[in-house]
Image (tube, rainbow, N blue to C red; front, side):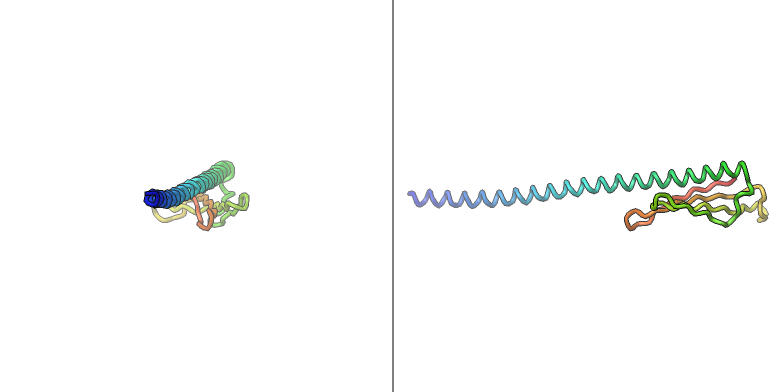
Length: 134
């Protein structure tokens, strides 16, 4: 009779070890997923911050150019880009283009100004472009 009870206890003990192993596997998997979500969220936050800053710089550069064009329209030479680098992250290019009228002639009273801000997000290049006619 004692031998029978001992065999049952031995089986139960082995079964509980297997349960503990499965519980550890599930726990480690859950912690891994939680850490991946945490660091993925930080990456998304940084990406959004870089995008907002890029849009802000492109818009700011274009607005400054529009203001300068109202003061001195001749200051913008067509097809000569002005390149500015901010914080070693962003590169902004301001380019002026000639505008053609309906007949295909150069319109002397209008110019198209384009502001392009570009940056690298990890290894992926990003850019934003704003354009206006002054």
